Amino acid sequence: MDAPPKPWPTGLVEQVEPLVRRVLAPNASPYTYTGTQTYLVGGGGDVAVIDPGPAEEDHLAALIAAIGSDRVTAIMCTHTHRDHSPGAAPLAAATGAPVVGCAPLVIESDEPRADAPFDKAYAPDRVLADGEAMCGTCVLGGWTLRAVATPGHTSNHLCFALEETGALFTGDHVMGWSTSVVSPPDGDMSAYMASLDKLYAREDRVYYPAHGPQIDKPRQLVRGMIGHRRQRENQILRLLREEPQRVEGMVPKMYKGLDPRLHGAAGQSIKAHLIDLERRGLAERLDERWQAN
Image (tube, rainbow, N blue to C red; front, top):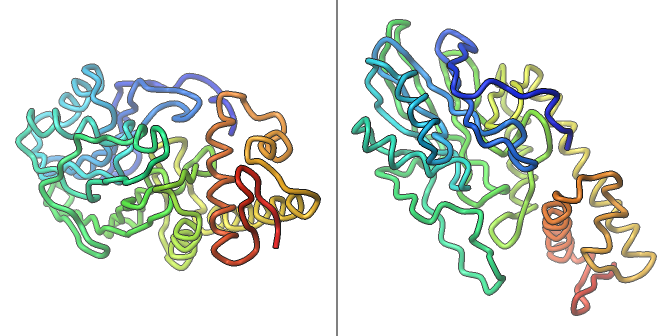
């Protein structure tokens, strides 16, 4: 995970292609890179807002200014992490638009703070199933955003495909600066890998992630991400074959030079790999340690 090269402009509208604008929220952090990017699709008529971001007054004001006289027909959330969906409710109140997209999430777990990263207040007016679409009209004709179910980073994660231009809004499933954290109990490595395979089979022209720059060679990046995860899996198995391991002890061995603030996230992804390996009969738990089979 690289540090941002320089601050990105927050609160400003950037036109990334004729049907797509973006506004960066002021929530940069080691976990969000330069911040959460909210995308506006359409203009001069109907507009959809993708990932309204955190419920911060400055960001909401910037979105309202960007929307201008357009009619917001949908506020669409890829998933319910707190840097993505909390802005949906105040934006809906300001515009009268429905909240549409991923399902609300309920985590039943005894793990402390298992639901801490999630927006517990998220309440969509409509949940989109895989393949369902929202449509609108604008000065350039029209737009169609179709849901592409991509569980893994979270169990309720959706991407949205802009059919008129071949763009895919990838939320946190594929980002422009880092691989995604897969954090159990809701995050699932097996589902995440299957979702990467699903995207690799598509022919999207460009990815617009919620964090980091746009991705102009999507299939090349996804292929690399799949290979990266397989390398991590092999690295874990090599360590387990040497001796039983604790997750916290594996992090510095596998992520040399990583920002210490991200060690917890790295440990969660290792844990997700271990659970997947356990399901496949390649590893097993020994209390707080894991060993290879």
